[in-house]
Figure 1: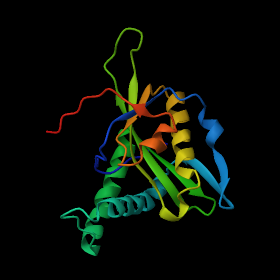
Figure 2: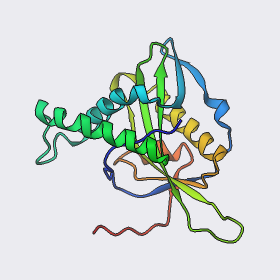
Figure 3: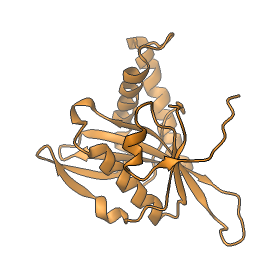
Length: 194
């Protein structure tokens, strides 16, 4: 089951990368938190409306103080169908996988998206790929319980099982330690902002 993200929002600081996680996806299927069972898995198409709402909440939480950011009902009404179209297109193209942490009643409490990027073939690695991780978000009332970390561990195990050689991300300011505890380390990339 492959899923998608919305328009790339760059959450600067530095690029972190994770190379070859060591556990399989099966190690991270179900965990109990806050007296609820949490399941970690790729999202299903029927969950796209909730993913679009979570994307909206994430951007409002992080961008509301930015000049020109519009959190009005009209902006929300315009955003949701565009996000849903993006999610569906990503699923159709097969490059995006949307990871979710789902409570036993079906509520998505956390999500993270990964986009697989094929690498140029080289001798010994004809079909390599890396993964770009973005839109890592946990609902505020569910934070501090390890759910986001567990979701990323499931994604790392999936990446290993699917021959994704490296995961990269641009962490939000102040989140480097969180990602560092999960094995993401500063990389040696150069960036150009066009």
